[in-house]
Image (tube, rainbow, N blue to C red; front, side, top):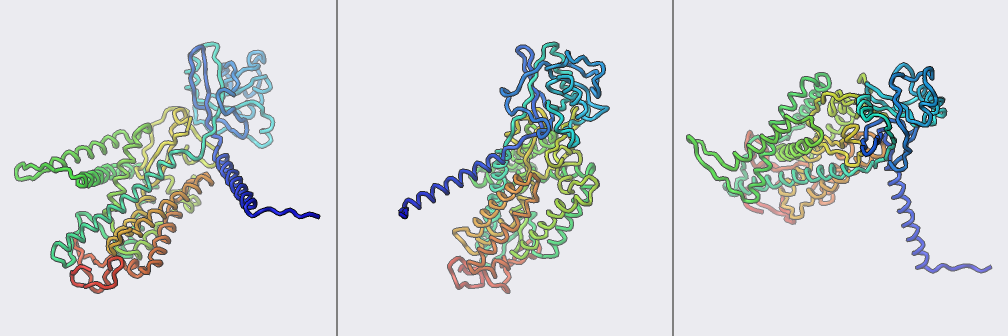
Length: 558
């Protein structure tokens, strides 16, 4: 019996081909799994040369619709809104046979209406509703009996369709949209760039303070910038987190009152933060100030112009905050400035404080997202309820169930505590309402404080490669990608700190351990805080420039 010898190169080629095939299969699986069927659909109405589209809600697992307009069948529309169609009495089969039938909602189940319409020969059932449109469902025994499409539409939309008169033709279709919406990439970019810029800014400020300290006589003294806050005590960190918990609980119970307080505070804080950011940019590009005096007051033309611009942006946002179409741009702009200024202003003095703060906030995030639903009346977490507002029920429904208002509603007030980017692939967003991808400011600021500490530590050890800062930024990027991946796979919102905190803390600790600098990294700055001043603490071991092993203590350069 002859044996077959496969040359080494041939075997390698076969393995390579197999690997490529496996990768292709995996990519196809990911792509196909990312295509989901929405419960919102489109009612395409045509009358002569006039075409319009309206939002409808259906149940894809019960009565699936075509995914494209071209593939959808067209039927004449029959107005039967004078009845709720709980039985066939008073309805002539010849009138509805082969047509799309519109009836009113009420008095009986959706499945009963569908069975009656089906028995009369109707090809499609549309249920006009004056109440919130919900995903239609039925008992398990009823699902197999219904063979015609069933959907709910707004009654006000039907009245608009009815104006067209006789001869109206309709099509129902529900294009799938991808879970991998481009808005996720935009949100990821916003988060990573904000964290990186905030950390870089904090490091640059620290470098300027150290230079000014040396220039001031080499005694290591440097004034803290106005409004800067140093967290150097574990007790302060615990109190800070406890206050956050108390504030969140108060927002849950007194949302309708406190929301306006938070909005006012946000307008003031974000305008100030935006001014600080733009002023720093102007300094960076070397833009002059153009000072002048008025009654012994020395005023800067640049500062006045920037202040006017920042206040105007905050006021425009405050006035139009509930306009979904475009106001999210201003909210994200103000939010980015707020996060950047926060990361530059709040300084964590050492890695020990970073570990305590981030760990406590991780527990805080997980508790208020995953545990509190067991205690709330509606089963919604306190974090989600506060972030989205008590009236945002459409975004809090579980699974594939959706709710669409039947009538225009007064916009509910929402806390300005999240970045918002509209879902670009949401084909029905102009019909059923805009859908957004959101990310809380805390998911940027909290890991950003650690990134800022790493940036300052690079300055203290004179690291030209900025190894701690870059490593922590990469860890944040991987953490936020993991957050979005789990969210897409589970179909549920995630507490981002559950992934971001381990990624950033572990990475920073590993870098410090590998470089043999854990002792310095854990202890942090060689400066202690005394009031507004940062004074050299000679009791601690000085931090050394990268690559040096000796250093004088009293103000001389290493």
